[in-house]
Each structure stands twice: as structure tokens, then as C-alpha cells.
Image (cartoon, rainbow over all chains, first blue to last red; front, side, top):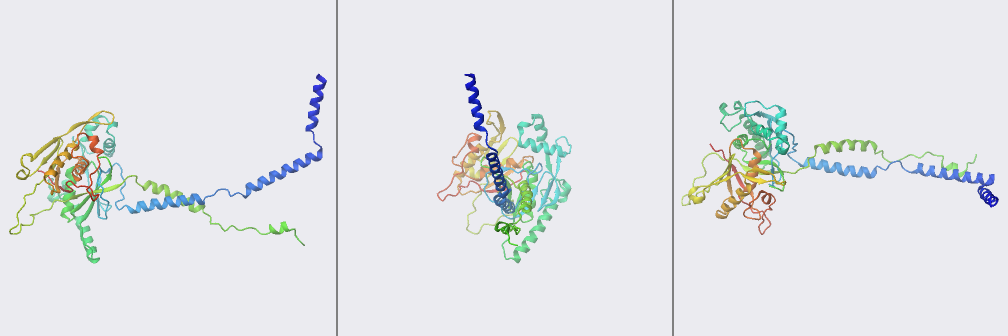
Length: 239
Length: 197
């Protein structure tokens, strides 16, 4: 029985043994196969970027159009955070007045410095302004004591910039002068082009700015013959 | 000496006519992050306000009846809203006070806020009595933030589906009402800022 098994094993070993010619032929076949595979890999392009290029071009065009279509081009930060509203009036070309927590600017040029003071008379440092913006956005993240302190933060324009240095005045002289200059230039341009002067101004106002300062800016704009005042807001569906 | 056909076909070196897109691709890859950084993911709209006009109004023409204005004014204070109207036109309801109210947020936590639903409901009542009136004067205490004033203008600008709302949640989600032509029904769209002494 054991001899029989040995004979069987020996028989199977004999079946796997090939003659040297067959072995050489098999090796040649394998080499050819490898050569063909290497050739196929070499013929393939390394990386197809044409379709990726198309997608990138579409994205680039979309971003460029979106950026250039916005006449206000507002970039929000801790010094400028807009109020939210459901108003749907689109932004039109007008003189832009930006009211940040640090400066009032007309058409990117800083005109008046905005001061910041707390109830105890301390001047706000940049950290307080940043913290005020943070707590304004997410009050749950700030303690009630901190909220109470930040509630007293007041933004204002120094009386030296106002008419006759009177703190009660609603006319900010440098702002009025700058707007008046812009209005004159606009009127001349409209007269040359035979266009009607509409007296529009876009006010891009930070949401923490108090009514006193807003009223001063509106009054200064009104005095400079800008009666169609539009406040920039972030559109929201919830009131 | 004759060459084999296979050797002849491989004799010349092939010149690629494709444009090298890799430098352009590199430039685009730099431009896109820059533009995405400058891109804003919110929509900017505008809220119109009329600057108060100085001086006297136009004198009435002979024979023309001088109609008394309603002079509807909303004053925002730390305590809430105060609606004022010309007493001889509005009658007994000339002065209305709307105090701040305690609302509940999504998590059920109470918070105190201006009662914008009540302000809207009162303004709707006034609009029903004075349909032709379009002007509203808005004033505030000097320390009131612009965001509160913006919300008050929002409440007075347009008519909503219902005439009154009790809670902040249903008011904030309320849809605008439209007329037969599909235009939004206006409430008091002409906003004039006033400064109360």
C-alpha cells in the first residue's frame, strides 16, 4: 500500500517535469508577455489633464464673474459685520460709505476715525473690539458678565470733527466735505453724459454702530444732497 | 544598404504637437484659492432709507385742502418700541408702547428681545386704518445698535401672510404677502430717520 502511494507520488512528479526545449519555449513566451505589458504601459499617457483643465477654467470664470459683478465688494471682519435683513433690493452703483468700528471711509479712502469707549471711560483696545464682535455673533459662548461689559462699548466720532466742535451736532465735517466733493464730480460727469443725477449713496455699516453715529452719517449724506440712502445688509430669509 | 521595413518606420523621431498645459494648470491652481479667499458666501442686498429733508414743505395751492399727515413714528428705546401718531388723525390709539418680551430659543432657553411680532402686528393694524400711508419715521435712543434698527425697518417694510403674530418663531419664518399681480404688498416702505431730542 505504501509502495503504491510512493509510485503515485513519483508519477505526479513526472507529470510536472518538462523537457528543456519546452521549458525554453515557456520562458520565451513569458518574456514576450512581459515585453508586451511593458510596451502597453509605456504607450499609455501618464496623466490626462485636459478634462481637469476644463473644470478649472469653468470654476475660474465663475469666480471672476461673481467677484466683478458685486459693486460693493464687502469683506467682513471683526471691524465690519453687516446687519441681517429680508430686504430684497439689489445693490446699485452709488457712492459707497463704509462705517467700520475703526474708520468711516468714502470709496476706500479713510475720512474720519471712529473712537471706541467703554462705560468706565476706558478706550477700547483691538482685543475688546474683536471680543465684542465674537460675542455679538455667538452670545452663548460669552459669560453674562462679559456681555454686560461689552454692552457698554460705544462707537462715536470725536466732537472735533463735528460742526463748530459741538458734540450735539449731527454733521461730520470731513465726511460732508468728501461726499460734497464726490457729488460735485458726479454731477459734472452726469451733465457731460446727459444723465440724470439721482443722489444715491450705499452705506455699508457695521451692525454694532449706535444710532447716534448712523444718524450723523445719514444727516451728513443728506446735507451733501445724497437723499437716496441704501444700507447694505446680508440677505436672510428669517426675520 | 536596404533596411528592414520595421527599422525604416522607426527611423524618424516623432514631434509632439500638443500644448504643454502644465504651466497654465499651475497658474490656475494658484488663482483659484486666491479667488475663493476673496469670494463671499452670502448675498448682499440694500435697505432703502430717506434722509430727512430740511426746510418747510411746499405751500398748499389755493383751494387745495391741506391733509393732515399721520406722522407715524416708531421710537426704539432700551425698554422696547414706542409708536406715535398724530393724535388728531389717529384718535385714541395715538401712543402705543411695546415692551421687550421673553421668548424661548430652539433649545427652550428663555431670552429677552424686542417684540418684533407685536410691532409688525400693530403696524398692520395702522395700515388697515390708513391704507394710503406709506411713510414711517424711525428714531431710536442714541445707544441703540444699527442691527436693531435694521430689524425694525424690516418689520415695517412689507406685509406678511398673517395680520398678526404672537411668537418670534412664527414671525421670523413668515412669508411675504403678494397681490394679484404677484407684487409684494407694502406696509410702510418709505423710511425716514428722525432724531428725538
